[in-house]
Image 1 (tube, rainbow, N blue to C red):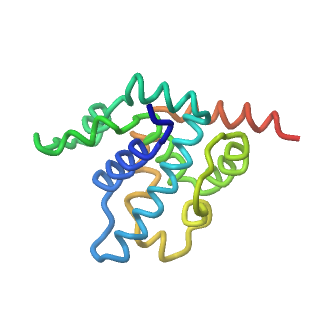
Image 2 (tube, one colour; image 1 turned 120 degrees about the vertical axis):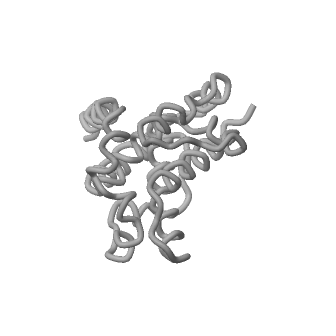
Amino acid sequence: MTDDLTPVIAASTRWLLAAYPAPGGALSRALAEAQARQAVTLAATLRHPTRVDVLLLHLLAPSGSDRLDWLTGCEPRPYDTAWRTWVDETVVSWAACLLADPVLAARAAQQALPASEHHTTGGLRRLTDPGTRDTEAAPLLRHPDLLEDIAGLHRPQLMELLSAEGAELP
């Protein structure tokens, strides 16, 4: 059994991009994907910080996208459902919180990543310090009001986790 978060990160990123698409243009789509992937990677690392957590995730399976689809009014096509089983609702909700609030994302990265057993590759700058082009490329993906239904699902658990980890820091 693998201790890799890649399937959850890929499916959850894909779900976010389908629910909150970037405006036209290849550059906008690439920048939006980079931001979504950074948010999902950070959220997945927060949610499943150890190898044992990831093994349990693979054993028990993620929650899937059914509730998220229902909340956003998405009706997936029958042939477009296999990847949706790898979507982790909590990870998507936490990623939405992080996308809507770059200050929270920076705090999460500072507090949680050092305690994680995962080694995240690449930086999180597009998530924690988005430039004008990043913001323009992902107006739906970063809009707090549009994300609220999804972000609100598991925000209290994220805030509790960050408060507990913040208390442990020197």
